[in-house]
Structures are given as structure tokens and as C-alpha cells.
Length: 170
Image (tube, rainbow, N blue to C red; front, side, top):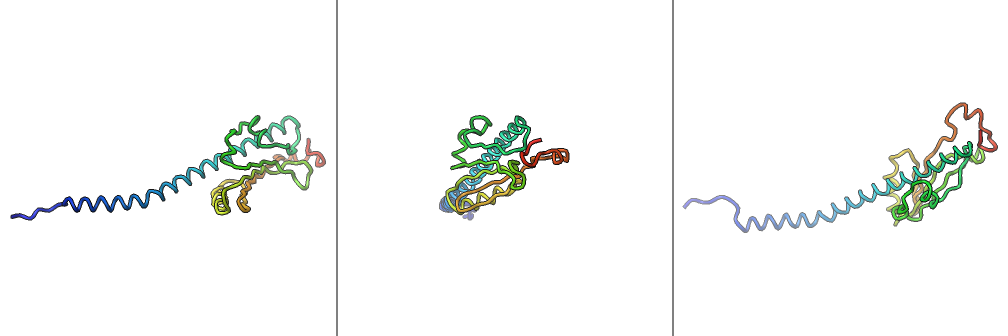
């Protein structure tokens, strides 16, 4: 009698059992990575949308007043007037926005600031590291993240020569 080569039913069941154990142990880790990547993309989009809305508010203010001053804005104004999605608060809890003024020239706008809370200190550090690839400054303090984007209110030599330093207007 000739010896047959190949897999027996027992071998096949063993291979399937080992493959099932490997799959069962790696699937949760892969799902966590996928969820974190998706959360990071949503967070990055929310930060970008908020900064874009702040830019719109600032541009409108500058056009209306002919001054490079910093208007007072809040999240509700950004939602109602400057195209910020209303569900932004789900992605960025306790969102706070501000357009900061120069300490040297009163009223002159110098940077856009947004800040929001995260679930923990570790989460804040992880998120802040992920946001640092943009042209913004990111700071994590406890579970609060602050994103600062510097702006150039005076973009020409003519503007520098003709701005009134007491009012921030031309």
C-alpha cells in the first residue's frame, strides 16, 4: 500500500483553530487603531474648520472697518455667520475661540486661538502631538488643548508705514 500525502481532517481543524485564535487576538487592536485614526482625522478637520471660520470673521471685520483690529467673536457667531458646522461641539468639547491682540500696538490682531477639552491628560498629549504638523502652535495643559495660529495683520511695507499705532487703522 502506498502512503498518501496531504492534510488530514485533524490537521485542517488545527490550522483553522490557530488562525482563529490569531485573528481573535489581533482584531480588537486593529479596530482600536482604526478608531483612533478616524478620531484624529475628525479632530483635525474640526480644528481646520474652526480656524477657517475665524479667518472669515477676521477678514469681514477688516474689510468693514479698514482696521487691523481684533474683533470679539464667539462660537455661536462662528456657527451662525461664518459657516462653522453646528455639530463642532461634539468633536471639540467646551470649544473657546479668540482673536488675540498685540501687546505692542493696541487693538492690532496678531493670532487666532482656539482651545477645547479632551478626556484625559494622555489624550491631550497624544492629540497635541498629532496637530503639530501644521503651521500652528499647539499646547496641552492638563486635559485642555490650545491651538494658536499666528497671523500677519500688516502684509506690506505700505501698510507698516501708514497704520496708526494707536488705533490699528489706516
